[in-house]
View 1 (tube, helix red, strand yellow):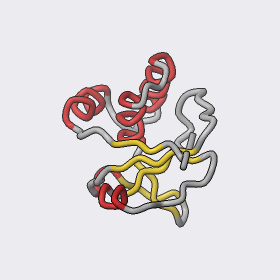
View 2 (tube, one colour; view 1 turned 30 degrees about the vertical axis):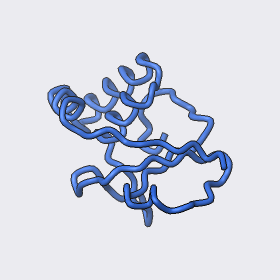
View 3 (tube, helix red, strand yellow; view 1 turned 45 degrees about the vertical axis):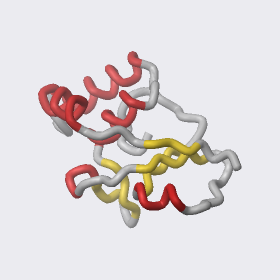
Length: 107
């Protein structure tokens, strides 16, 4: 995981792109799952030269993408311990953010 939270080792890379892109006929490389969402500035951070979702947004996305609950709980616990967010932040985020639409990299 980009943020080093939990023991998750996803088989594919998950990339969130603007909702408007869902109208395009994008060629999605194998091993990539596209998600469509319009993210706010509070949902985005930088890892070197690349924009990524914040740890809190990533937790939210995992709760809506059928990631195993034990891995989500582990990520939440580790994020709270590292001071990335609070449990109250997680509760608020899970209750308020819109869900993403998915396209799984298959033609």
